[in-house]
Length: 329
Ligand code: TYM
Image (cartoon, rainbow, N blue to C red; front, side):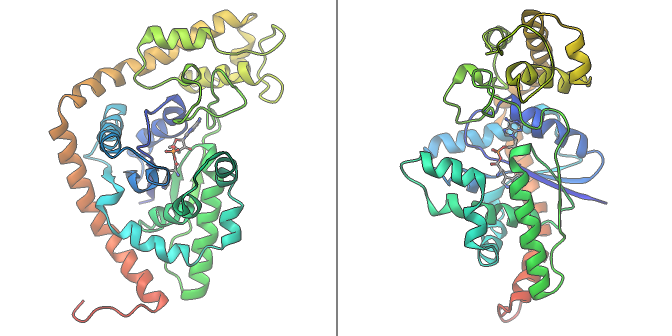
């Protein structure tokens, strides 16, 4: 059976981009592939975190996975730091990836220039991401468009390692959807929607109530002119709305555009579609938030399975590079 792995950082409130670009695909994949979905808490540490908030976000992300429809009886849900093999394999990956390759990562280039402090972990994090994926002999990695470059690097690192030390890792494929793989900020439609958004009004949170969703879409920045046309290059604001509506309705964004002559009704319909799609999620999320023990039990079972799967690949990789196995192992 094909193996699927993906992860999300517990570094802030999840938004519509995370849902449309990633989580909704996880929900489909879990029924078709042997799937593992991780809360990648070690990745959150690449920027300073408030410890209590990090713990809260970790539990909340688990509740979000469950509320969105991930079913622990068919997929494995776990926290990255509960499986020490991630950090251990990450070192082997850091010693396989090139400094120049990491320096070329656009996420690093974009953020490092703007930040006052850039941790070494922020620079090397694609090596940890490669370790996450390769540990589980993953075939397919469902992600949004912004992770494409990291997936290419993971493939290069796996191929290099296999070439140097013998066949150890499966070389994975990125699975990036055709629609809404890059949801843009509603206030700044040339910038992707993000957990660290400078504009809260431009970011639709998965927990936003319907009236807040309606207001954010109503105030969404649209483009000059009044024509409704799907053209991300010249009409990024309108095209973003059409992509969101298309992702939720399963229709084609160009065909949807033909049904509108003004921006107002498109904004209202998109807000309605988003609020309706999120309603069952929000009800379930509220229930799970009131029952942290249920979430804890899911994560415990998930980590046990992940540890078992990861142990074999880690042992093989360590042996391949020439690390001496301890006596009696
Ligand atoms: P993260 O936590 O930033 O984002 C989680 C997932 O959401 C997608 N995403 C988006 N999709 C569409 N539009 C957007 N505006 C948008 N913003 C985020 C991301 O592409 C991602 O799929 N490095 C990763 C986490 C990670 C990972 C992994 C992923 C760590 N190890 C192994 C896959 C496999 C990250 O920072 O994602």
